[in-house]
Image 1: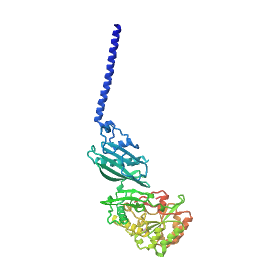
Image 2: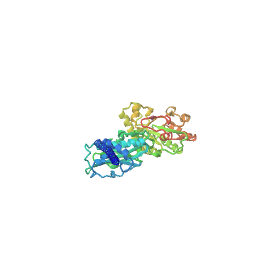
Image 3: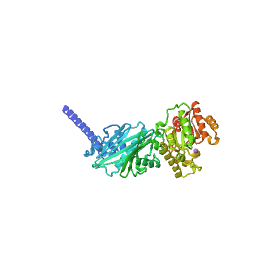
Image 4: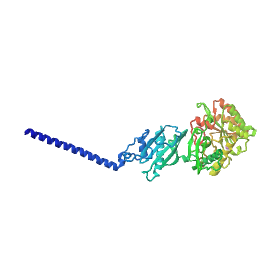
Length: 487
Ligand code: NI
């Protein structure tokens, strides 16, 4: 009995114990069930991605999306939307490594391909832009739930010097219908900031580009507006524009040399490289500049060109539009082929000075001269020297070129004597200086014929304005005034 009693007690204890364990197990089970129920009701807590950014971060770099999700398992398998991989719009130029991110939600497949920049800030800005683009497209649908759709962004990029362009191509296919849209992103590496793609060029640039496009393609009406040329890409040869106006579409590459004075971001490298000779950066440099010409009288301009060539030297000619208009074709062509730098001294040299012009008058002065110089020499003028060195904020804001004055005046107009000009310039000759002379005077040309070999024999390299600033490491900006390499 005792034994029996003990056995009964043991049995009861075992039963009680089991009951306890069972209770605990049940409690846990019910608890878990309740928690899951709650999670299902609040999907945002269930670890699903709320935005493309989240999905991006989760999927970044991996071909198969890892984004996991209760949400995904709740949704029936998409029937018309392909699972993996998302098909991108086309094959585009990817200068840097391309990365992509994909994710699926409801019956929508979303994929973004983007450039992978090493610079973290640049990468982030670029991704934000692409993501916002995608988000905007998705937001255009009120109800995404029952949409069978594929939304993809691919891109085509380009770069020149410190500027990067990324042309994002968006394609969506919803219920068998395909739509596309393009959007441009521009970044300035040097300033480490985004550039509004529609503000990179001045209004006047579009009129020029339209003209070129019409000439090239034999088109009658080309709209010279910002909107018509809103998409472009930087290439080695120039800016490649995608023209679109109504039904009319065309493409054109415009060399940087034709655009740089219209650009709000200027970089030395945007100019053709052959404008910079291979020079010794440690030897002193001087930029001789000749204003108010060219002239055929007594072959003066040609004699300066000859003296420069014979001494392996170059200079910059600030040409007057009104004078070049009357100059002989051969003279203008000789200037254009000489390798010297051609710049603008504006059209009229009016005594009122540019400061007292209206914006329209100033623009006309600059535009006319630009056209005349180009038509005569085949070269676009690179800089502007305001007559009398007179400028103000209005002139700076509307010139669309670096304004180059001088810090040594040869005083030729005052001295009017070969030997006096010669002696004065030699005395003032120092590294980095810009010297003002006029190739229209006989005594100046005679002085130059002596000065050029003399300066070279004293160890100076006679250079163009472009070369001077390039070798002194000064970035020339439109609308800024420069008196010398050291200002
Ligand atoms: Ni002048």
